[in-house]
Image 1 (cartoon, rainbow, N blue to C red):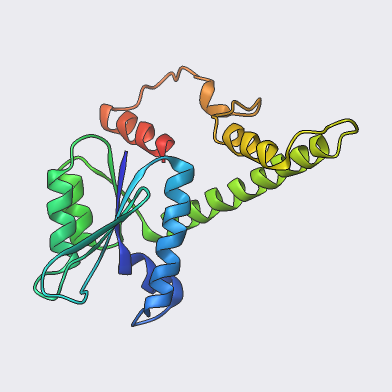
Image 2: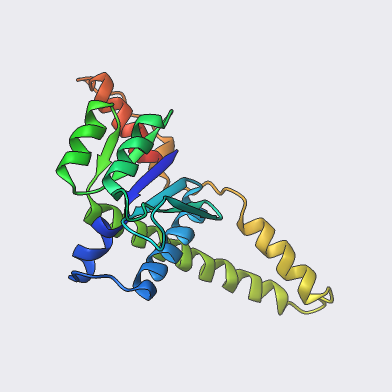
Length: 196
């Protein structure tokens, strides 16, 4: 799934700023990289401006950062991305014009504040899961008679932590038949949001 984000539309209201500096923007991009790594989604974040008159694109892991250049706006780039995108796409913005355009193409839109809260929650949950796995690793590593190399142990731990896990309290596995079925659009939105 691809998530298209209206960059400054997310950052400015959160930080209550009229102008966002390079450091704050770069921190936000790093958070997006962590989220994309956790969720396994492709993320495209579009910002107004940049240091040239043309569109400038860079890719880092699963995050594509796009600067519109000063000859076009981020809104124009986002609309073009939405219309070109095939498959499941979520558009993160509070811009009404972009929301209406995305909905006209049957794309799901998510409020900027809601997405940011969800993203930070996913990052925090992943960090606490890592700490839990680290405790288990440390317990194994300190076991009496355990004489393997710490480098190999850490490599094995890291590769095992990247494997998908099924938890007993995972509600997404359970399917409950509803008496009133949702419309096709509602089912599509539910499916996409579960992937988020």
